[in-house]
Amino acid sequence: MRIIAGSAGGIKLKSIKSRQVRPTLDRVKEALFNMLGQSILDSVFLDLYAGFGGIGIEALSRGAKKVDFVEKNRKFASIIKRNLNKTNLINFGEIYCEDVYNFLQKTSTQYDIIFMDPPYKKGYVKKTINIILENRILNSRGLIVIETASDEKIDLGKKFQMIRERKYGGSQIYIYKLSL
Image (tube, rainbow, N blue to C red; front, side):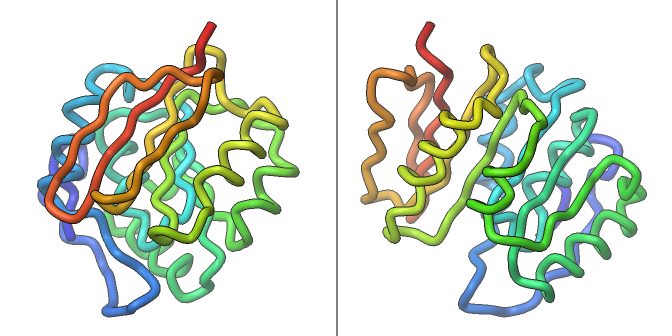
């Protein structure tokens, strides 16, 4: 796992083998950030179910203003901190070692981009989206990015408009914006 582009491009990130986390493959990460394009610049970015922090750190490396990482596993959260230090991006990231739902209920930050890569096929996407909507933490022009299993279909209903949907091997990326 490495940072692909930007200020920390080429730096290898720390990770450990674990059945609890599935880091986004470099080719999927590169495709995702190509799809996001300039929207990443100066964005306030939320990385939910952050694992080792690869997506959020890539966002910082490519010009996000701030990233909040939410990961309830203490060991993984400490690896995110090490990776932020290693990439010299520690001042732009905040790590919350807690349950995603608890974090979403109490945050007052409005995000430009919310990325989520929850455990596949567990039903977390719908509940997470509902809490995001209830608490209005997505900027009105913001984007929600969801990584799921390639055979898992996501439909966020009429409140969202799908912008992109792409499959990459066993993974699938959805990008949504709020319907106006």
